[in-house]
Image 1 (cartoon, rainbow, N blue to C red):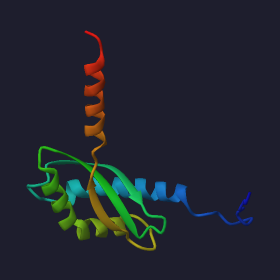
Image 2 (image 1 turned 90 degrees about the vertical axis):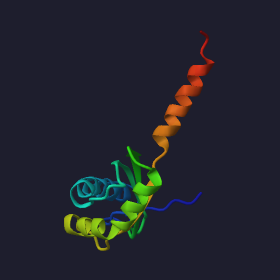
Image 3 (image 1 turned 135 degrees about the horizontal axis):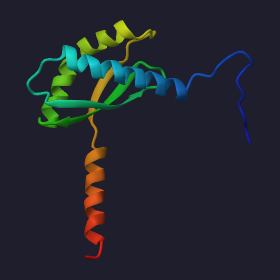
Image 4 (image 1 turned 45 degrees about the vertical axis):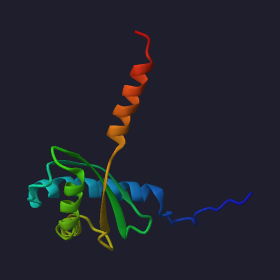
Length: 124
C-alpha cells in the first residue's frame, strides 16, 4: 500500500480549495447575473452549483431555469460569459479567471420524476 504525506509546513492543494473557490464563484455569479446580464431570453436563472477544475482555469456552472427555454437561457449566459468573468476577476483574488461553461442543472427535474414514480407505486 502506498501512502503520500504532505511535507511539513506545506498545505496540499486539492478538493477543499476547489469547493471553496467554486462556492465563491457561485456567489459572485449569482449577483452578477442579476445586476449585469440583461437578456429577455434569460428568465429566472438560479446558479445551483459551480464545479471548479483542479487547476482553477475552468469552471462548470450549473443553472436552473424557470420561465424561459433552458437552451435559450444557456446561450444568453454563454454570450455574457466575458462580462461575468470580469466580475469574477474584480471580486476574487485568483491567479487565473476561470473560463466558464454553463450547463443545465437537471437534478430538480430528476428529483420530481423520482418522487412521482415512487408516488405511483404507493397503494391507494
